[in-house]
Length: 108
Length: 117
Image (cartoon, rainbow over all chains, first blue to last red; front, side, top):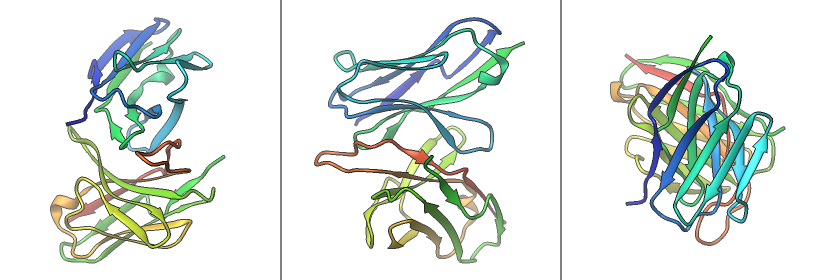
């Protein structure tokens, strides 16, 4: 069964720290990989989309990388802020499989 | 910006009622999706549509049906609501489809939280 796994399931860090969220998938035949954030009770907001031909994408303090050979994507958040507190999900675009999410809490 | 609009943010219905959840996108996307999200279970695909009047079952289609009469609108129907359908429902759209899978970026609505009493 094709799966997408996100580690850790929850993370709490002090404000200002750099952090990495991980997403791994079992099938390397990937098209795109997309990272989302979700605030409580809200929909999903797209953060970054990495096309299958790309290795990384950057937007502000966020950087996402994709390594198809190892079946992994990472989301790097620099200089974390309390407003970054949310649940982060990755989705593998082929067959649209979502990871279970990482709940991030930034302590002021 | 792509906008995906779900008609109702919060609904409360009685067991046995027929429920319609509406979703409209304004970017001429071919693909539209309905998911439900439950704590501990993540997002699960109910149905998707890759063209007008076309639909495909997702992972959990039981108890649901869908309608796509126009390209911009995708409706989720609960013929007879039950308490186990209490959930957050999320609609998404995306452009493009290639052989072998989905290639376009996903855009989500704000979600519809349904409570069935």
